Image 1 (cartoon, rainbow, N blue to C red):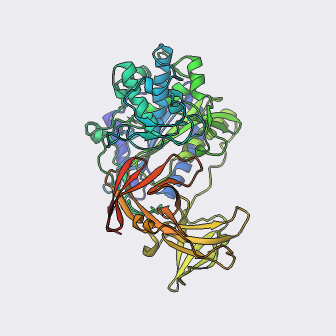
Image 2: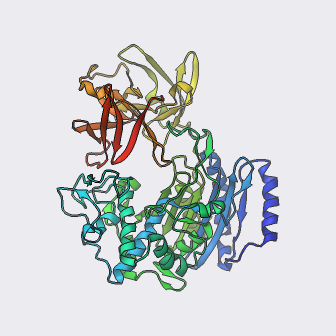
Image 3: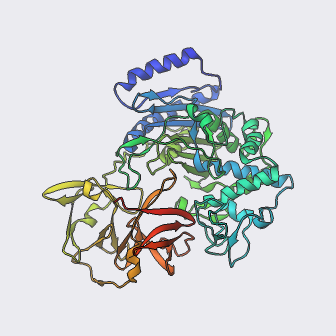
Length: 572
């Protein structure tokens, strides 16, 4: 890709300055059609730009980067919108974006290289390589294969080295039985790479992937050294409650991260080079990154992974399924203040990477998916298919199902009214819109409802809605026929409250008591296992757990959430 000259940047900045006065959507192309063969995609890129504009407006995206490649080369690098919302500074092609868990695919390829060098047996217990890893388990040993496929039985999202030197990680089921997304396992793989390769993960990935692929603007560690090169990035202004899609954003704090589960920062041009290598089945410009057999292992559907969608499976650090009858690999990445998506059509040999500089709960999957579909249409001599329709947050599927009056045992009323595909809460004679959330409930745009999601329940998908809940409040309608009173251990009242960890990764959660059971943030049921310990009730095999500790005046002051520390705060 040719470099951007100062003159070119000045011209782009001038164009952006004009556009900034009329809206958020600004497009810069640093390498559009730089590859002569890219001319064939002109119609696809025009349709894609139109969709990206709609998508960014629908999703309240500050800025986006996009890198597109096929087997022949990088076909397009584009940036959209703003890096700095306050000063209306545009996203530039040289800005770094944190790619999050897409890092896992890099990790897997490094491990496959080490395997091919005879340094690693994927089916050997991880404890034989990393003796410092403490795990308490009644099952067979965890292997490297289990870590790569998120099937270890370990909970997600905590550090390998626990604060309590006497503590050990816990497994919930036999390794290989179930898929449960686990960043912890990939952090451990990072230490394994250090052990086998003799250098930390960031240096290993630089030597083994960045340099051979010409990814000269990519980094394996997020640090202050690259902050000035990183796009300004955002997160919700209030992180202790659900975020409405058009809620207020705030600049995120600086992040230092070297965890192999998600610590790569890259530009759209560099990510397009990575996509090109994947589209070529593991072959880079200087030769193969992994052998054909190694790449086949990389994309093999080793385990069903419905967390990525019905029918999806997981390979090694990458999800796999089919799209329009073509084999697809894909992954997303969520950071404190970035969201990314990468999709590749392996049969057609093309792919796209998209990233947004704000964490608002979603990933730009529709953009990456539409990019490869529109490109494939053009290659087949067709007009690009219509883009996905607009996605306003207040469009509620089957809104009428939730309409009616719900009453709590104490006599509180919750009145809901539907109007087409919109839903409203009636309060003090006024209507307040209900919006979809990224979680299992709805957001009500009213200050009295902003702390929790509004959730509804029914016996099954074909049955009518009979219950509503908001935090500790429980409501039923006249179709409800179940019990109205519930028993529970009295000490559970001391477990309710607001708990916080000031790490930007963790934030807050609330525990409420409703219908005789405890709920995390009002929507995730907790199932008692032993005294003050509970497991998450969203899945029968969930390895996530919570333990209430250090009771003072009847109230728990300290909580372990799958090993992570949280402390009670008396803020609401």
